[in-house]
Length: 158
Image 1 (cartoon, rainbow, N blue to C red):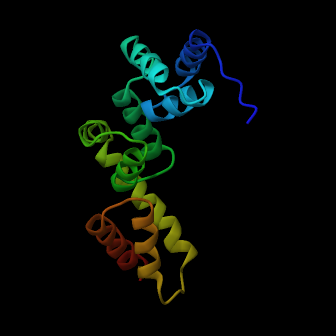
Image 2: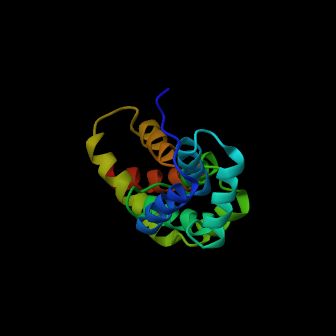
């Protein structure tokens, strides 16, 4: 296929460089290592073990950074964050620990801001409540939490 198989030491050094610039989860780096080594799983496993031992890869650190960023910058709720981290191969305990670091008060404020902006864009829409609910659920917020905020916003609007 034309894929050049690299020297394991060079691969490890390249991964150290990548991991020192930003957080990666174990699964992301494993894909890169396997590709660079032409699929040699044994050597890839040794490199991964070294990177974890040297603290270049830490799934809890990655999950915590991911949860903070997606919550504060992207406005995602805990459900969507949990789902996306699970898709990256992060275990449940690590995800739960990472979500502990997300400020629930700020998350509620973000939900309120997102929905109040959306309410304004849907002012005369007869399906406003359903569209708001779908929007909030798509962002990863719980039904009960979203329904409460939506009810309050629509009462204020009317």
